Image (cartoon, rainbow, N blue to C red; front, side):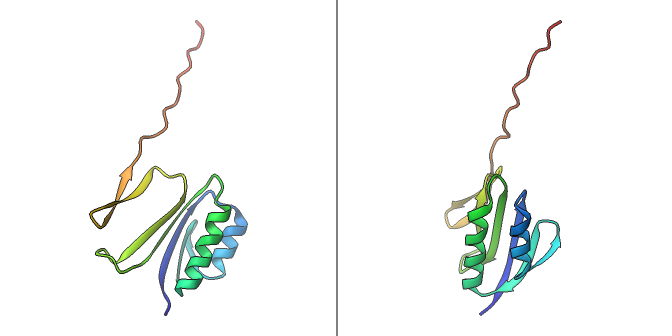
Length: 105
C-alpha cells in the first residue's frame, strides 16, 4: 500500500534529482514528496545512498513508532537523528572550526 514519503537533498548530482522526480514531485529545490510503496521507497533510498557523494539526503516515511514516522539520513549533516528511549530526537553537532590565519604586518 502506498504511503507518503519526503526526501530532502542537498548538493546531490542532477541525475539523482531526475531519478527522484520520476516517482515524486520536487515541490521546492531539493525537497521531493510522493506516495510510493515500501519497495519503491527502499529502492529510491538505495539509489540516493549510492550517489549522495559529498552531498546529504534525508528520508522521512511512516513507521510503526510512537511518533508515527522514521528518519533515514545519508551523507554528512550537522543535524543527526538519535534514538532516545524510542523517540527520534535531532542532535546538533558542532560546526567545523575555521582555522584563523594571521596576516603579516
